[in-house]
Length: 325
Image 1 (cartoon, helix red, strand yellow):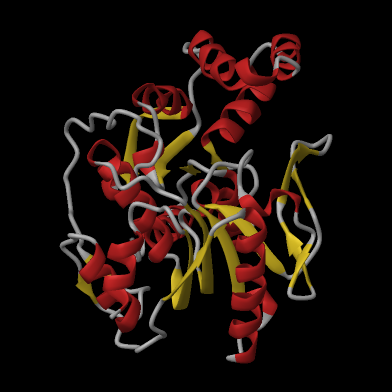
Image 2 (cartoon, rainbow, N blue to C red):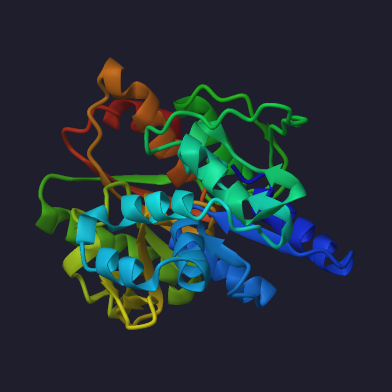
């Protein structure tokens, strides 16, 4: 985390363009894809995995079958992959395949993506296994030259020391800036969490952070995230994904300067100030790896300050409080 994977992906894409090649850049989640598309000015060859599949099938697949599967809700994404395998005889136009956040890909997705590639394509695969939250088996990358980087350029020193005391990580912290010591606040009820969120966002703004610099990040999924019904906090509107898409397949968001997102959708991104919510982890040994990954992902999103809203019964509470001292 914070090693610069997305920047490397962007550089590889731009170099391929400069060399006259045709690159395909694919990531896992839609918000990161949107950010990469904006950065690179390309909505055709830069996408998340399912967005690429949808676009490819519209161009080369069975349009009627695709439209029928889109109306099938939960089965749609699996149907996309099945349809991609059905057009395996279509030659691909791309020279370079660039994968960002590859730890979230399923093993067969890599094979699906190769359908879009020329026979002599090159692949750059970027991943952080410690940010794998979805429980997918690792993609076997046979024949790849591997380079491992344990430097983190994003996380400032005080948050880095907090992470070192909390989690057992082998990290070379490379950000010389001091940043702010994380603040751990507790709540007992959802109403209590909202009160704490109000107070902590106000405190961040008093410190000089603009609302646009603050991201509220839930450790839960989209359907159970604490912020899902909020329209504003601390007098500022909240921009959050509604779960709906427009007719062009673009996600529909509410309007506001405060960004609210789940950790699953915010991976690969960062903000000056992060407020982690819904920290109600069990702390049980059988959940340790997944919960460590959630905290690792969340804590490494902040470039200056990080606030943690922790449920009073959270199994990690004492460890979080000790890490702050």
